[in-house]
Image 1 (cartoon, one colour):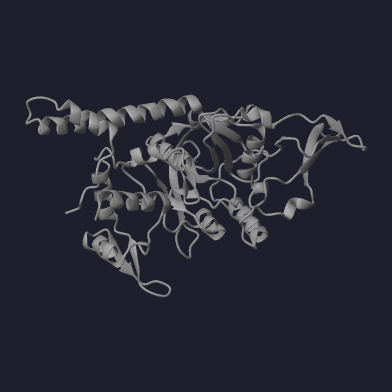
Image 2: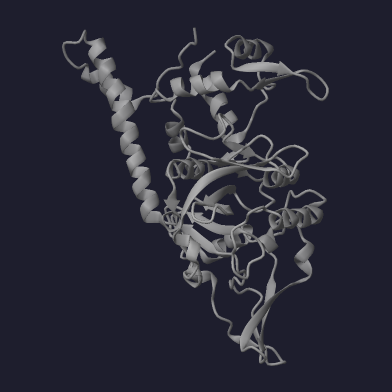
Length: 406
């Protein structure tokens, strides 16, 4: 078995919840079993070889991460700009960043910058912790586990959900205790995870749209915000809307209602035929998040996040004021207006802190791992008398060859 092959399988299992090894040859699957990483279990039609031995996986992860070229952080960094049907590099890096940030409880506004009209939310400056939320099978009993380097699920970090039902199961039950959920494209959000306030001990579901862009254009921002907005889940982001503002003389408040055009029922390309039903079920699941944080005037305990990097999202562009009036005298926003009337808090990445932490992770990774190991290797190569500078330069500039597992 090649070390690079093992590293790839381990990362897929940890980040995406990919257990099956049925894509490998019979001989390769036998090797995984022989080394204690996998086992054979009954499948729907035939036995399946799955990567499901937490102790062996953890030991292998520790070994792989000590290798500069095979480490998890290097893999994420190398692929941060890559996007494919099987995974998005920036989404993966965000999950890694969030997990790293929440090694200890952090103030929420140190991670996210809230749009200006959500500045008065009291809990945004509270400390939060990253958690997994699970319901016991056949029970309403809730289990909340804090995720830190010393606690949490042993290997199940992320779930690459293949269907809408997978997403619903993660929100409602999460039997396999995945910390992160990567929903299918047609759902909306790119990344979902739960955090818990250390003050109130209430839960908040964070729904993230990730964009690796140097410039965030207005239309990209509009559609991106919709992907993390409950009313837009399972809906095409190209739907045109008309928002009517109505003034209530009884309490001097302005109320708004959002009307969608006939395209409301249109599902995004590739969505299943029961997308409308899944949309209702998703809303029901969000509404029944237990111990949810109170969000004033909002229906669900969620935080919407448009995470762009390295470009700044400039969220205030998404809340233009209406400039037209209807025949009845009501103010009307044109159907193409980017106005976002949803009352669920909306934030973006705090880019200053994100860049600072990423630079710190890069520095620690290089100085604590790569540089040290290459110097030791160079000394050994030279018999301990002097540094072999040509080899050191080659090691820095060239990828390491696959290592045979013995």
